[in-house]
Length: 104
Image 1 (spheres, rainbow, N blue to C red):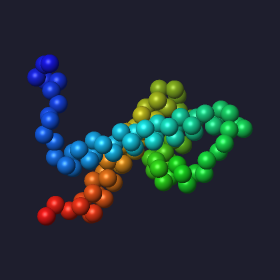
Image 2 (image 1 turned 30 degrees about the horizontal axis):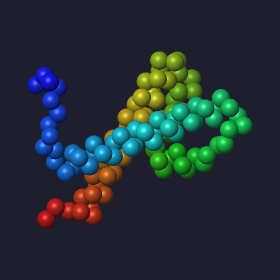
Image 3 (image 1 turned 90 degrees about the vertical axis):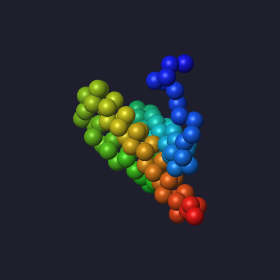
Image 4 (image 1 turned 60 degrees about the horizontal axis):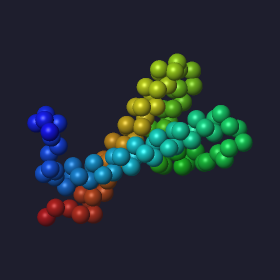
């Protein structure tokens, strides 16, 4: 393996926490965004509460910007929303971890 591609094996607890929860946030945002587009195309599909979107993916509020955006613009906005949600989930996990398990 090339030295530039090596992943550090000695991560701090905070880094591990962030790296565990950020992918969960990304998956949640991708699933909710995908279902949002699906339910927009299929009017008889189950419409979940908007509260679900705002609690699990607060950046989904920015998906309203895709309404009049071009296809590349929509892809960019959705990508940013998904990444923002991943960062948010990782950050919330860090904050909660530090509140409930402070290093002494």
